[in-house]
Image: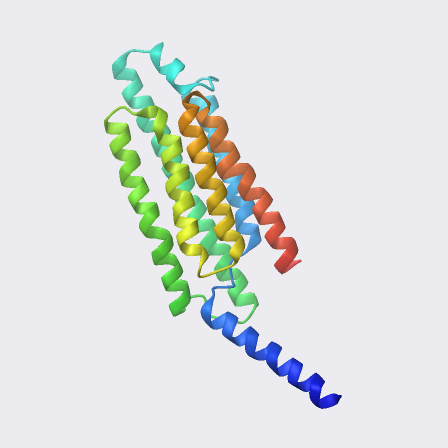
Length: 210
């Protein structure tokens, strides 16, 4: 009986070692919560200080001179880029903190592969969104952000918790729906980058860290 129990423990230990060597497990659920809060804050900033309380960007732009709308568009994109960069930095900060708390190294071959797979679609999306802005395709900017961000999560999901993959799928779906309802871009931004991240973060924290 003792021999059988020891064998089961050995199998569990081997499985844990294999899992830790093939997946990045220092991703913190708290980062998801803070990313969500940051995204909602960025949207509220755009709503209050860039769009003067208007939730429909295109309608707001139609009521302003062309020269003024160019500046407003770049301000919106700058706000979005700031949110995305801050989100990545928050994810790195909480992941490094979690790795130190667990006595693990943050920078490993697996974490490097995760970052590469995350950043390639993210950088591509940034360039694509810039092209949309230059071509005045404002209605596709929020869908572009959501879709490429979702693709980056799906791409990186195979190197960490499976929940990341499903979060990416939800971001892609949100982006695609947003493309068909361009006037509601800000609400989709709040839902995709804000609400989904907060729900994901709380679920991850409760499952792996609480």
